[in-house]
Length: 410
Image (tube, rainbow, N blue to C red; front, side, top):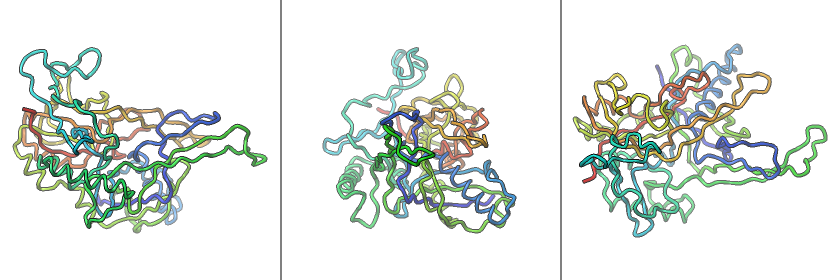
């Protein structure tokens, strides 16, 4: 099936609600997530393409592309792709220090990792991450890292001097408000800035402001040339007659506007597995999986394709079998939204808990060549299928994975 690739450049600050209740209460505040989740991008792209097709074939429903597979989003800034920072890298303010978080094999019984719940479940299965969290982390750590730098991180080709250089550039860029002086964009960039607006509620009849009905909204500000990048897979029939798209379309809460532009297939090359990754993983005994987008797993933080012993069957049409030995997963990410399936008023979608982007899973290879797994599943979805009819996480681009090697902590 042909792939169509798109850049989404927000023209306004984006309101990406964090699923907290927002009721008619004086002084209430609508908070935003730190980045744009895949479901928002997928819905925007599908609706924009359906409206484009409606202008050609008037009988096309808005749900025409509702089942089309979307990959993304990643972030493109000054023609470089960026992904969320991995959680197996700890950064410190003092002398630009860093710590490479790696688990250590257990030497005897009773030395397992106890951070999986009150019951101590998997306490003898997961290896302990010795030294992790021992020092105070940076107050304002980077939020995104270039994909080029991430490839070096995944192949264990990054040393402390390179991290120090990247952090020096990062601190200069923070002072200059996302500007840089070198020809090549920096390896690390900060989180998106936020804008808070105070607003009023207006009466429907008189169009006057309601008394004591002030509220505020929090939105994400996108720097110049900072775009969302995503692809959508269309069948020949779906793609037929659909000319290259370029136009303005709403995205996120309050229908803020963004410019959507279709890009040539040359961008697809940036989404293929680099040769350095395949070479570094060839017949290696250890595999690392880093999430580039939030993932849905049927067992919470644990992928559904792992059994009770944290072992997998042959994965994703390969001969590779993996065993999980540790995972670095922060607090769950809430995802909700609004369903327009009800033609009268619509309704809120149930809140779901996703594993945040940047989470890292450490595996030992039990069978097969992990280079085959990386080549086949590079920036492909590893999410489980959701039983709810309205949730299509794999189709929306949730759980896109990056693969690399690692070595146990000595």
